[in-house]
Image (cartoon, rainbow, N blue to C red; front, side, top):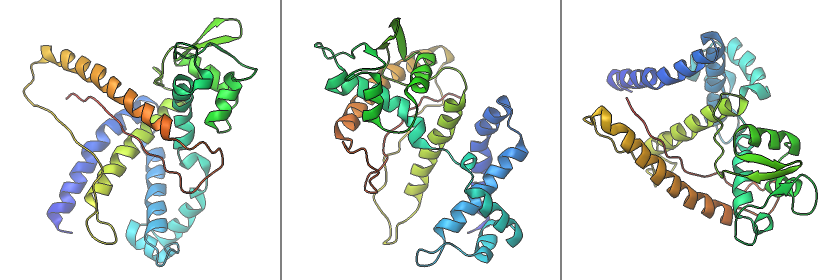
Length: 269
């Protein structure tokens, strides 16, 4: 790698780290804590993806790739198994899956095709809805989170109505913190995939596009943001419908199943 490319990569790293640093500082995460997570990520990638014939990369080569000492690599490898060092994207996405199923699955719709009011127990009620989605989140905890996020409302004692098909809590909590990591991961993984080659050379790129203009008057920006919000939401609803109609009906863990999706975002600077 040339010095020019290395300098460009480091400059890009600093650029994308600015909103990350802003978010972490706002929520009380120190650089020392962040650097520990960064070290875990470097060692995990070097250990798992640069081995020979499917084996884990040895300690010495991991040290060379990451710039850490062999002693430090050994210590960090012991920490990688700690659940607190990883984000469970499936758990994060489960509230969204609950809302999607509530809006799409005929078992939970009324005669007009709208989400039925559900109680906690009984045939085709909220507990059954969670059973269809899968996972091990307790029904009470899931319902509390959906109500807190403004996606579900209690219409009478013990009866609940779905008022939004989109899970997007407004205040920072554990789910939002995890969502921050998953959203950045998915975008970065797509870009990294598109910039690298497969074992057999160049491969089909994943969809990743942007449109922008550097000369938009400030007063017109809110109109564009509303256009993106309205049009993007309608587009996402059609994607969400396709995903719901094509998901596996099996509740068992199947290694052939993949996580895939699409994200749309507005930016301003």
